[in-house]
Image (cartoon, rainbow, N blue to C red):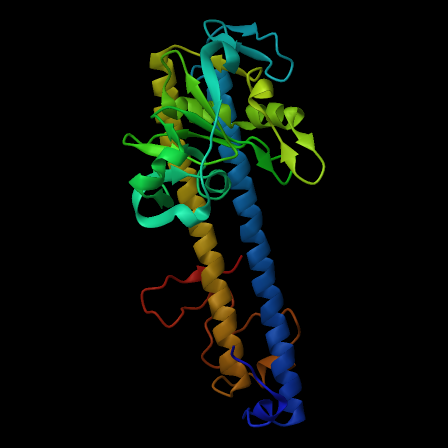
Length: 323
């Protein structure tokens, strides 16, 4: 175990400018930190709005379809509202079968082997669809696990909050694969589009319905006996495919924007870290800037203008604009 003791700290060398220069440095860094934090908050809000947009796009497509001119009918389900007239409102218990996943422990995991989806993976690594596997098990241990097929919907049987209980994803793995314990497996008995079902089974309306079914205090639980009553609006198989294709493209575009915003946050935080290091070690002279008012916007001695915050030391990093 590594450790540091008081005698070690006594040997650490640091730069100590005059007290007035210390105050100027603090004022300057406080100003810059406020600007960076304001920028980060704006980007985090943008990410929230993009997530909301993603949910709205999915909800609209899987409950209303892509044709806004189509005639609507009452679904008979209060939370679902009207659906296209030619769609069928079904419960999962009418269109497929449920089973309980089972398996060994995480000690069974190997670097190379057969894909295995654990309930924690559904929470952390899969959104709507499972097209890769973080975990693998050896063929010798696979008999302890539940086999899954392409198009199966995997629900989490437990969770920490009522909002996330029953989170689900459609299996898009085409080869041999398995799931572990605390996973509820739904296998459609009719022809469905797996990508459409992945979106429909975990859209906002479905998540709300599952939250109403959850039970528990410290840990929330949900069971197949409840999930079989979950309602979905199903169009024809051709329309399911068209909706899935439309959502794949729309979600990819939104995720690209989210990734860009997160990268901008990373860059500006890298800039702040490097700026602090340069200022407190005297590599950047901010004595004059530190005497300016908090609203000063003119860059000090070689620092890029505040509206064009920096480059990290990798020359290919992009500049980040401060909002």
